[in-house]
Image (cartoon, rainbow, N blue to C red; front, side):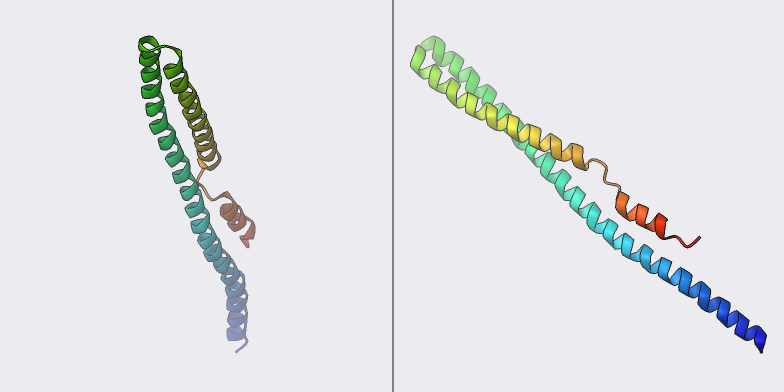
Length: 125
């Protein structure tokens, strides 16, 4: 009889220890999924901004070529206006490019560090 009480006691203790740990692991896995989703979303935004910067860069080159042709063909007023517009597009390209690169650099490591560390720290053994 005391043998079954001892087994029950050991089973209860082991179940309590590993039950909490398994619950913690499950919670951290859910947190890791959320963290991964957030980082993937931010990476997507960064890539989108770099694509937008590339598109504006293409238009910038076209506009600069147009301004060069207009400057040679017509004189100061036409190409000066085109260069001012090209300068505005250049500012947009720089802002989008730097912002997108920053987002990608900040979120390139998509490993959920916090969740992994919490699982490691919660291990009962």
